Image (cartoon, helix red, strand yellow):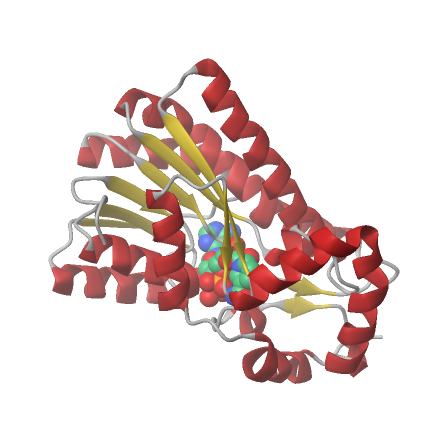
Amino acid sequence: MQGFAGKVAVITGAGSGIGQALAIELGRSGASVAISDVNTEGLAETEERLKAIGAPVKADRLDVTEREAFELYADAVVAHFGKVNQVYNNAGIAYVGDVEVTPFKDFERVMDVDYWGVVNGTKVFLPHLIASGDGHVINVSSLFGIFSVPGQAAYNSAKFAVRGFTEALRQEMLAAGHPVKVTTIHPGGIKTAIMRNATAVEGFDKEALTRTFDKKLTRTTPEQAAKIILDGVRKNRARVLVGADAKALDLIVRVTGSGYQRLFLTVVKRLVPNAH
Ligand SMILES: NC(=O)c1ccc[n+]([C@@H]2O[C@H](COP(=O)([O-])OP(=O)(O)OC[C@H]3O[C@@H](n4cnc5c(N)ncnc54)[C@H](O)[C@@H]3O)[C@@H](O)[C@H]2O)c1
C-alpha cells in the first residue's frame, strides 16, 4: 500500500488479530514498526513475520494500562527509530455481563485497557508526533462505540469514550495547526481471538457466545480489516467503518435515532438467547 514507506508506526496489541495484521501490512508497505503486547508469544510471532518480510521492527512487552512504562516506551521507540509518525492504539479486551450483575472491578478493568490504554498511548506519543511534522493518531473504537447492546455496558462505555476522546483530539489538532491527523476506527465483527480472550460475568455461557461470534457475527478477516483501516489512514478519514456490517448498522442507527435500541434488543435476544 502506498503512503507508508519511510514512516515509523507504533502498534499496541500487535500480538494477535487486527493489531498483528496492521503490523504486517505496514511492514509490507515499507514502514518501520514498533510492536507491543502483553501476549509475548503472539508478539514474537508478529516479530518473526516482520523480520521475514525484511521490515525494521522493535518488539516490546507493554501493558497499555501502565502509564509510566508507556512513557519510557515512547522515549525508547523515538531513541531507536529517530522519530514516530503513526500510533495505532489498538490493544483491547472484551467483557460480557449485564450492569445489574457486573462487579465494579470488571467495569474498571475494561475501562483501564480499552479507554485509558488509548489515552495513555495518545498522550505519551503526542509530543513526538507533533515533532515529526507528519503525525497520525489512529484510535480503535468499535461499532459498539456507535451503538449499545445489552450485556456490553462496560465495553460500550469504553468504546464510546474512545470515540469522544478521539473526535475532540482531531478538532484540537486542526485548531492548533499541529501536523497531526487523527482517525477513529469502528470495526464491525472481525474474525479474531477477541471473544475467545474475553471474560464474562459468572455463570454466563461464553463458549456459546464465542461460537455465535465466530460463525454468525464475523465476516471480515483481520487482513481485510487492516487494509480498510490503512486505506482510511492514507486518506485521513475522521472515521473508518470496517466491514459491510459496520456500514449497514451505522446507517440504521443514523436513520432510526434512539429507535435502534428496541430493534437491536430483538436481534440480540435471538442471536444470543442465553445472555438474558
Ligand atoms: N474483533 C472484533 O470483532 C472487533 C470489533 C470492534 C472492535 N475491535 C477492537 O479491535 C482491537 C483489536 O482487537 P482484536 O479483535 O484484534 O482482538 P485480539 O484479542 O485478537 O487482539 C487484542 C490484543 O490486545 C492485547 N491486549 C489486551 N490487553 C492488553 C494490555 N493491557 N496491554 C497491551 N496489550 C493488550 C491482547 O493480548 C491481544 O493480543 C480492540 O481494541 C478491540 O476492542 C475488535
